[in-house]
Length: 207
Ligand SMILES: [Zn+2]
Image (cartoon, rainbow, N blue to C red; front, side, top):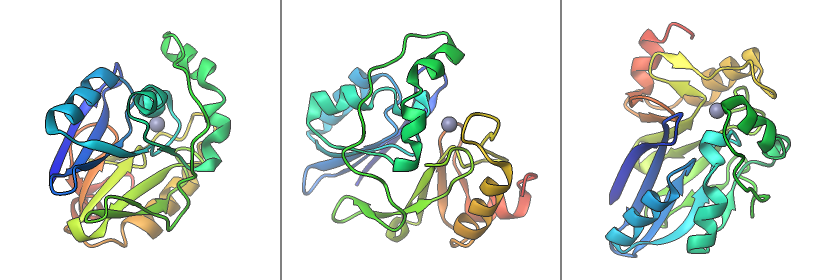
């Protein structure tokens, strides 16, 4: 398995590329920016992109999705509860003082319980609203891996002061959907270093 996580764009969103060398298929999670670099990694590995998965519709996570779709033909998946945020791309770009990227509605909604990813490395979608109403985490149970978007960070949790944020809801999502996963589950947050569910259960001051 190929698994690469690298920060992209001015807000250093963690973009993850997962590939299966046997089938030649790949997924990309949160192509917020630097689409040329992401596309080059796919080409260098000889991988064909099967799905573009977006944990939520903040500009730093979704900004490059349409460009990557145009380069590869892969569908974009994003939870439908974040469509209002996707429609606010100009204001989101205004918060950062940058030009708004072009966006398009997703090809499919990342609904809770949906199985996505690669045949040998599937992930279950966990709808974890709070940072935004359409925030999801991707749980690759056989890999003991969670891609957490901006819901859970090493030593912190996602901010809830932006449109669609809800502080009580994010705590409830983390406690009922994430802390119930096995302690050894590796967590790849949307920004910053990796952690584990056990470490966050023991030492995250927000929980
Ligand atoms: Zn965010």
